[in-house]
Length: 287
Image (cartoon, rainbow, N blue to C red):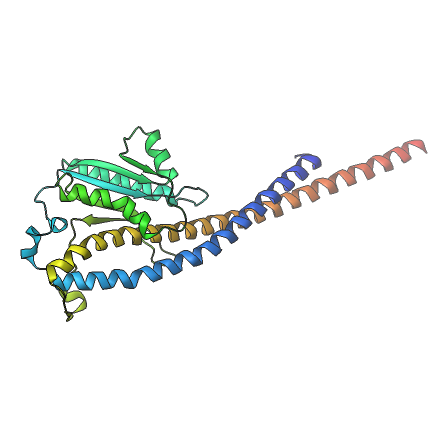
């Protein structure tokens, strides 16, 4: 059995660690609420864009708009992987990386050349470790991604797609569904595939100047919004994962503390009993 002084040191160490995990849990809870609000705020705009593009789209327009180009074969594809800059979030980053690796393997098995773009220190660190080349590495996008951040990630790739330098663009991030479900998710962003017109019902719009001029502005906005939505959902899922991981660590710390305190009390009682026995034995020897 460990000595009392050693057990006291362990107890102090666990108490300090538990304070840290508890603090991180509270911070993640606070950030999670704001991140959820950004996800909810982004969804109506995304739905409105989908409705308008769905209503304006026709097969004949594919030749006029490069972002609608539907390649028969995907010779080269770009993947944008979104991970976090910080850890302490359980399996959050590992699951995103696994999703990206699965997508890369699938595309390369079909003969597609894959360009990898990674946002977040955790994803960058992993692919550096395994020696996988990355075309772009970003660590400057924080907990509050903006529309400008989304544009900076996707605008150059839209230009490449328009010039037929790549045939597809995929985004790997977390699909935020609720505080209990935020699974990793792969989404093909380019080419733009207009939503089914029957999904939301046909809507009437007053168009000015014409459908072509409107689509020329809306299609890039649609792609940027898809990237922005992926960013805010991934950030929200990150805070949920960190809160869950830190709560579990705090709870486990409490259980370990209880065990250590019981062990310490038993050791202390055993020492007291031994000391009493020695005193009694010594007194008896003197009589």
